[in-house]
Image 1 (cartoon, helix red, strand yellow):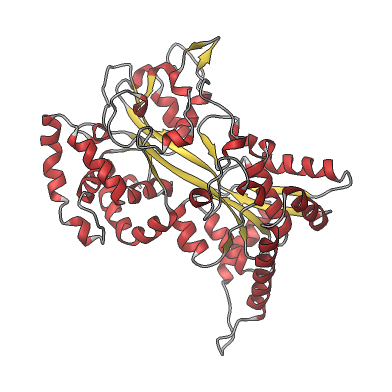
Image 2 (cartoon, rainbow, N blue to C red):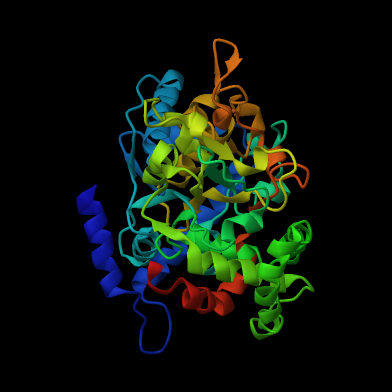
Length: 444
């Protein structure tokens, strides 16, 4: 697979060529024919049941390897299960799924160069970062949307929410704090109060964090920030008010609308100036659960708490998820999605569609993600229940592990998450990106 990635990166240096008269070169004419074929396959595939799709996949990929690429390494497990399932339909099936997970946000370069190359490798992708997906992949037509018929028929599936682009799952990042020292975080503004330095992955090393900040400027979330501000004590209001006032004219400069956007901009400014940059949520979680991290806080994926081992110095009991508290005010965190897409130059489009259908309608297809708390399938009917993962012998021992359904996380009466919207992020990023960076400074 390293050889495949190397060849794709080399293709990126070549680019897309055109003839002198401006018409497409033979290479791009070939790409256009691929696109037409993939569009046709998707249109037909969306009318088929899973069983019909699986038969088409077997016919197409016997003796071949379908290459997938994604931000989650668990696609490899799903691929293995997919092949096993196809063999139960046709014992002679000998196709393979080979999965790669590129690092350092290089997936967009790899996909773009593969599409522009003379020979195409990847058939489908599982990808995150709604901003870049919209601007680099969807607006360009590089990725194609496929919605399985069986997914649409599933109980709880919501096309409006998860169909455009089609999502495998949502991930959740939550505000959490170490409760050993008695610190109180009862409001989302508490995380940007004086002397607070929440642990958080750098917004330019994990761009979904930057998308979170963009989304905060949407009027519905700005209204939440204003409501949370109004519930603060008088002394905290006095601390934050001058900063809010200083943002009064920034919204119009950034092309933002809404009476309360200044509250979001003030919070974003403080967050960027104060957060403690981390390289990954795993080490962040490992630190947060220690006794020595008393009074520290973080914004991280709640799934990381599942793997913490109890010891004299570390315990899941040492951590509280802020929004789980009665009387908590404001946003509880944010969510972003992993989207399943077919490349417009997919060499094996039938197999790609069948694999996408398998992951989103079959429990074995989603089990690699669904076995743990913190991942929320776009098809609730294949979700596992993690509401009592923190119970030991019937006793609620580790409250941080008792998960909620995604409907609770996104409810205004529940988790009040800020939800990534690719179109809004893409529209806002051109104005907001440099503005955010001006406050992040050297954090990266």
